[in-house]
Length: 431
Image 1 (tube, rainbow, N blue to C red):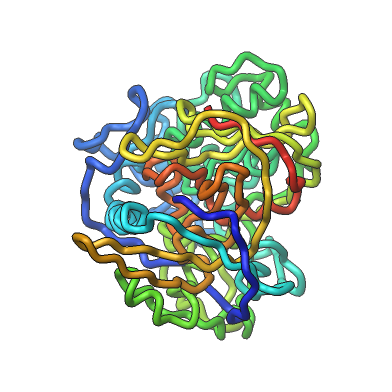
Image 2 (cartoon, one colour):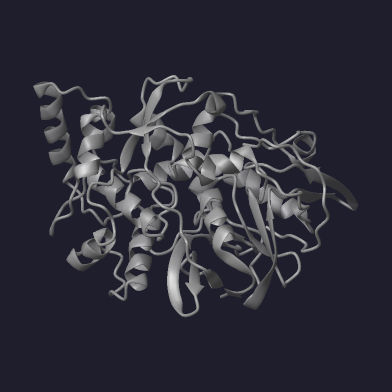
């Protein structure tokens, strides 16, 4: 995604919101490294204990089902690649196709800064003020996640996978959307966390890594919690995102399309996993659902970042100290990002996006309104290299799998964390 660093002020709506995941497949849009994931032929899917165990009662039969499903899950290595990544690939592929089409159309783009904006959709990601969190009526599956402890030679089970993804998120080695499937972003997050802690960067769990992950975490801190939906949650302005720049330019805002999308971003979750955890729920006011406890936001000054195209990772530093890492998309083969060291020259929440669509010798310019479904998500941080920046994404499940038109793309919640801590003038190395 390219952006011109020039900014002008305009008024903008106060509510915005993410996207309905599509299911068509265009495998050529994905560029995976090594053997992290099968690109065209899905592997056999392991037994899904989660589907069997959601909303368990305390009966002996349900407890027996839990134990049986856990045993079946132990047929694959914990650190092995997960077939769920293949399903994610198919699920987000259409949206990535549309995003890539917009990137190709856009040419020069411009972020239009808004006045000081305290936007509801950003609030829904950034904080939990006034929200209700409990653990009293969690299912057996949720309790198994919360009590999971890693042991040597452990084979994969869904509860341990979710626990590890949450611990990585809490320690600011982001695994991207938490989904209960162990794929390339989770493996990468382990390796990045190991680097942060000065451990051998193997990408595989071991005793030293587990001890470091849990060292500063309250052992009673739950991974899965109950959340009661509020009136504000259900009354958010949800609107279907149309296809194409012309149609999008006519929208008041590129809002969340539904409440599940909004909650997925707020709680750092893959929408499919949110649905599995809450099978049969209507997502209405006063209803209690199960979600990820997202932990404490990063509070560390960032004055240098390195965006590595090879590892598809953004490394955030305070001086020489690595304080956070995030899965990212950095350019593509067709539109590679520049190489070199630049600086952050502006930071904008809820940017507008100027899309220049070319058709033969003709050009049409469309201004796309702000919102999580904007092509650059909820944040734009422009670089001293004109038209390039660090920004969010309307397709969080596609991070590290999709392409971009030269910019550095993060999930909306990760880019908000960078935004909150990075300094204007911070160094940005693209390599």
